[in-house]
Length: 334
Image (cartoon, rainbow, N blue to C red; front, side):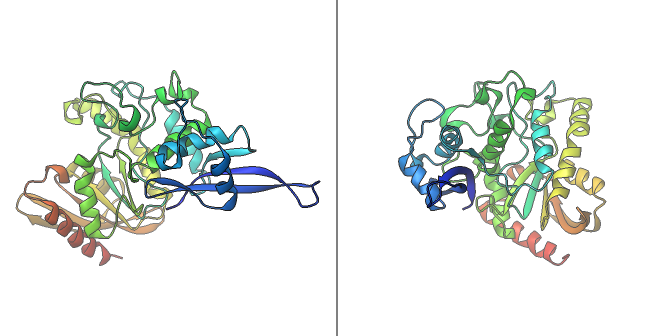
């Protein structure tokens, strides 16, 4: 559990003349918003928090309460926003800039780029895939997810015509949606990430525990499935978005990088000049390990030829066993 919302408020000193500033902090634990210090406890007790739909919301609502808290606090305190202290100096501009960049012709209408799934700011390892599924934003009938089914912020969330209009506070809010993706009570896409979470558990990491996060070569969710795009369209998206991924992987110290699929493996191995590659095979399933210099340090990297949600014969136990085997192989490279 970690601080998600922080705020400053003016307090009167004992002499009743001088003003000083104190900081409140609120976090999330077991799906419920909790105060992390006395100042926050006081405000959570006294403040009538109204959600973005205009209705009262309680701390037990968890993420919904946290989302509403900065907007409610701004009327009564000096400053309130999502906690960005974990973001390295200069990274905030990169993240906000990517959120504001215009989408591609194939981007899901009104969506925002998904910079990461889960808490990339605390993760020690990452999984990498092609691009976010359109199911992260759309229902079966092609309508933007809303309410309890909504996974990420969209332009509709902030009533913006386009991404360039996003304010800093809205960018911070959109990032909070991403960081909170795997937290209790959130509707994360288990049909895809459940396979990877079991693999990570075997390797010694977890999305839900905040020790792993997921990133993509392309941050845009596309209306068409990746394999329905033409080769030229796929290459245009990769050329546009992979440089941001390269920055991401070098911006934080990582213990391991896992490439979910053949194309991802090829891109990472080529762009980071992976060396000491060892390959293994289990039937039609092939996996490899190696290392590369990422952000000035040597990082173990692994990958495989089929995305785990499509790997035939890999049930829950075998996914964990694969994670344990690859994790052990990577530890030998450190």
